[in-house]
Length: 100
Length: 419
Image 1 (cartoon, rainbow over the protein chains, first blue to last red):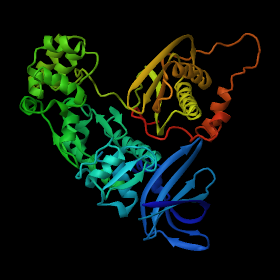
Image 2 (image 1 turned 180 degrees about the horizontal axis):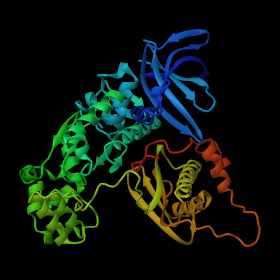
Image 3 (image 1 turned 60 degrees about the horizontal axis):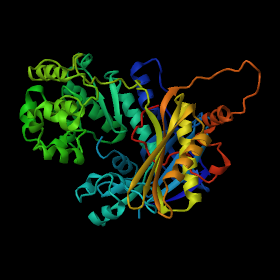
């Protein structure tokens, strides 16, 4: 497995699920699975659009006071690591991984 | 969790699923296997193995670099899931936890129902599997979960303990490693049954206070450090074997809630160098990094300490430790470094090559800030630096001497706990 560090801004089309915070079961889901609200569907990088065929893993990291959500997504060939900055609403394509 | 780090990487990268993989530090540098997939384990690859041996066991092994933030976040989310079942969740390590459901089991319909629900939720959310042991003590629960890996569920009942322990090797118990097992073997003790039958006097004679702990472990009790005396053990053992509920407030080692923090005895960091070296600049740089990391953790946890210890391991694995106690309490990286360097110079035998350096501060006390009656501005930069690093991330601002160092530890500490 190899990877390339990209670290470039990308435009991401994402589904933002509106949830009713008054429903306790939903409330719990947000606490345990906060990313469930946000799901990348496609992204444009260097004038090319990539469809997200599979969201393989999601995790969160905090740098100082800023929260970041990391999305490992597949276009069916490679795995792209997209990073969402919760403070600025910016998306970055951080890395591209490929087999071999 | 089953092969936690490796399983997370196999979820992240579908092309790794079903293949022998090992998660490790930088494969180009000196590192060991942190986690091996079950496909790799069938070839004999184990955690802690160096890469040369791991590749010898499995030439097809795929090395995947560690991604600590991914694992710690997953662990925190799993713990959030577990506290829906009880607030008595003791985080044992990044991928292990104990739950005491004594008071909440009736809400869910039984221990096995809770266990199955946890397994289902973890699989649905993360695509990961775990193994769960259900038992009256933590020692037995850990044993049960180890015996049903991967993706298992096993219950050990109190009445099963004597029969189960009869021929069970002592090394199956959490807390008995190879060295201790060898010492026990010298006494003719190879199974847990032997341990249970061994006289407490013999165990105490050979192992001191630990003999009492070992006797308790032989009876299926938790290996807490401070068993008051043998009478206490005997009483707990009697309760265990009389089928009384040892979890009901009389377990000598209760499950500690996830938010409980015991007082730290010491704060330390160590690092194995990428290559053995006797270059003073590299050694000094590493000591600076470790000292700053220790100092930052001390200040974050509001501690100061007055004993600095340095551990030095040479290329041939001979290890030396030295410590120095001082009058005042410190939490500053440069002071820790100064004392660490003095200890290093005392210990070091040039031109031997160094493999590992570690530094720790002990004799801790909660920090007390003495306010000055005179309005002098403080010359201590640490509060300002800590404030900036809290805001912008660990080691975003650091001493110029550390300009080329990576930000913070590169591995997950065994003492990892959720924030």
